[in-house]
Length: 141
Image 1 (tube, rainbow, N blue to C red):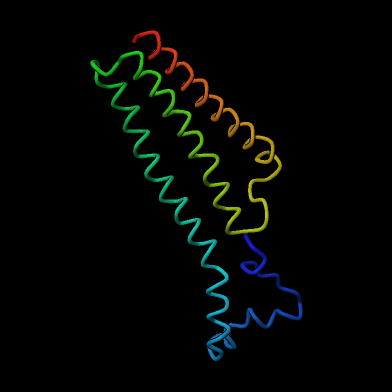
Image 2 (tube, helix red, strand yellow):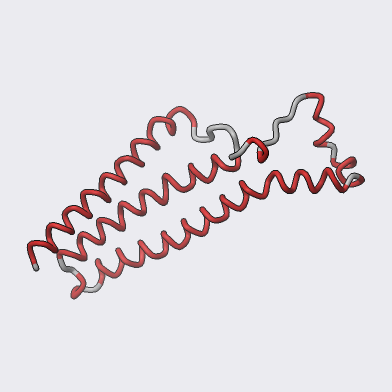
């Protein structure tokens, strides 16, 4: 976020939160609206990415597990990659989206330790899966 997109309120500025004043002063309403557009827009894009990613990765994993002809070694690697992507979607995206909306950490002390561990683990799963998939493709061709 740039400095111009942030709003810092001091006790003297508390009149900005006065709803009755905002109803009478159109410039004030427009100023607050502009301040929140970048964070809300970015969080909405993260939400779309999460929904599309969840649907796609769950569909891929379900297909590879339920259809017997899809149970091949490359598809096993793709399922593992989908699992790593699901971990990223569940941990990275919501945390990053919340950072655009609020300036404080929402996930407590446990989240402060656990979320980076899960994020790095899911990235490691993805990297090692892509390496194994590449080695399998190289050996089969």
